[in-house]
Length: 343
Ligand code: SF4
Image (cartoon, rainbow, N blue to C red; front, top):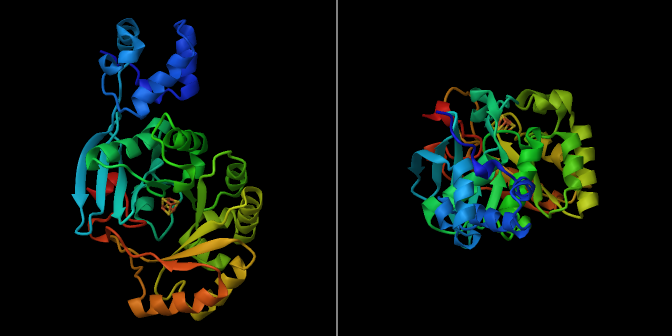
């Protein structure tokens, strides 16, 4: 027996089209969207303001899909990694990071990733497929349900390169932000990229105020070519030009993520190169000591070296922070997500 289509795969405009086709009033699409994405309805019967007849018509044609939890791992600090099994058996991961005053969820945008960054465990999985917009936004909803709390911040920094799955990612950001969707402020949503210049320029024109993070990890092309093969196609100069355009058009600063790798990108010369590279870009630099994963010879610098690097960089750039590692013991840290191969 073939399964009915998942109504959650329909965007708001898809629902508007559906309501037109059914000769319903146009406001019904918003009501329906709100039942699906704000009130977390799991059955059509619950949608009382639609009326019994409309609920029945929907139930005849659709099902309400949900992410099925495959596993959950909780670190001592409360960081929790969820694996979700999708309709086709694919597995993706999301990480919930509770901190005082802030509950962040890091979500995936693809099943695996095809960009092959040496410093990232996800790369080992290769790219299986893109996620649908509802599978991306659905991770926020599913985490909220599991932790029984409101998520305050969302980072699209999990498995996959968001800008290689661009339209579904933006649709997910709209639904997460919508006040009749998940309703999280746009300024609390961050899309992170390895550096796809054309898409960074497009994202500068995206009307919501969601933020941009760039996974930089090196201050010269030679080192970045090794760590992040995308740099062989889009070198630093091209990337930085797109980032400058983003900051100009949006009037916003950008966050650069810089994973510190001992002996590779934490040399004295990296401090000066990095400061020079970023000197005319409104930005914050987030230093992240490398999180280990299986089968890699890469390692984080000793903590004292991380401090030294941050202290030397700080006077040269407007904002430098060191990100405390969260969830690395359960392979939930930055660069450690890998879905199926983590199991
Ligand atoms: S760092 Fe990002 S872009 Fe690179 S392989 Fe990992 S998930 Fe893909």
